[in-house]
Length: 58
Ligand SMILES: [Zn+2]
Image 1 (cartoon, helix red, strand yellow):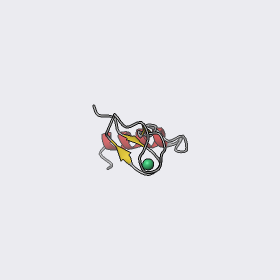
Image 2 (spheres, protein in one colour; image 1 turned 180 degrees about the vertical axis):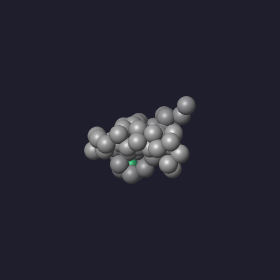
Image 3 (cartoon, helix red, strand yellow; image 1 turned 90 degrees about the vertical axis):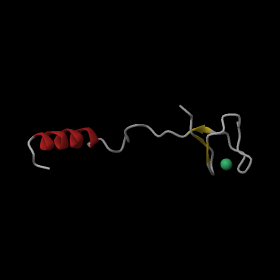
C-alpha cells in the first residue's frame, strides 16, 4: 500500500520527499482519523441504519 502524505499545500505519494518544495513544510500522513470525535452519534446512527435495513425499512 502506498502511503499518501500531505504538507500545507498538496498531497504526495513520493516517499523520498521529506519536505515540500513549495511550502517548505514536512509531509505527514494524510489519513484522517476513522471516526470524527465531533460525530459521537455516528455509531448510533450506523446501528439504526443496520437495524432498519434488516427490517426492510430502507
Ligand atoms: Zn507544500
